[in-house]
Length: 396
Image 1 (cartoon, helix red, strand yellow):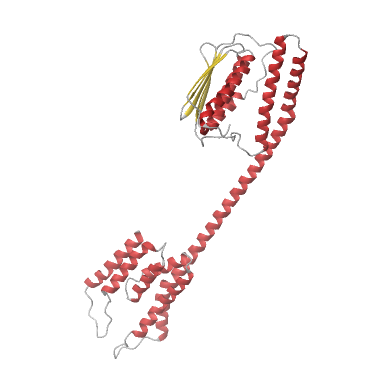
Image 2 (spheres, rainbow, N blue to C red; image 1 turned 90 degrees about the vertical axis):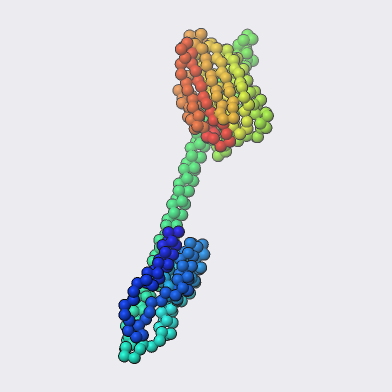
């Protein structure tokens, strides 16, 4: 735009200034400056056509060559020739270069002979003037500069392509490393955790068969059910670790059934917690959707972590949690009162110390927030806000 405006102004103002400048006295046969309306019109058209030089470079090239032939604005021709070369239009650049180089020769052939008494310039002087004053700046320099610029741009393109390929190779290497690490973790989990959980399930089954006391048999049955549920979730986790699948990728559930399915899973979790000796109550408002599957899973895990913490650190304490679903987020609030039992039978179960840390990482990865804090009555509060949506956050 700026180049077209500048050359248009020059094409209009230069002939005007030449016409208004008083010419010095000239002898007979001296050349008269050429400012014909046709030359000015073609020069202006060539200047305006520079707006099209990136998409239609042949139009400015033809008009600039015509302006050069009519002794119009000569600076347009090198620009048009440069554009053809830098865009790789070598055939048309060759035609344009030959035409531009031939214009002075054609002009010399049709120029009338000098008046009597004025000697004609020697041929070597004419050749030097043609080569140094016209051919080099008007044809050779634009071609060389354009070729250099085009080579540099091609080099940059090759460098960028190589950088992209290297980046992709690094991503693939990192992905392979992650897959290998996930496979190793899956193998270790299977060899260690699954082994001991399986033994616990077997021992609980044996105790249930041999028990003569109904409460003992019920407790053994509960331990076996919990172990089998742990084995089922562990198998799901191992399947995810051994493949590159999305852990939230399940069979699609209609939106009308998502809330009911989620409530059944939570109700089963509450029942198992109640069987372990905790007084749990809960309520839910709003409707879940399939689009927020990742948020729904994390909300379930927050409830699970809150109930586990209450059993571990506040045995016998009543627990109440609420789940509020909206179109923007899921709000989960788990609160337990102060512990009523000093210590559960058999002592407190071991804690890895990473439950709340990992849960906060999951919620934060979804763009939400999680707060865990003691309450004024010696209880504990776990509160999470999880954004919903089909593309928000990472899988839990």
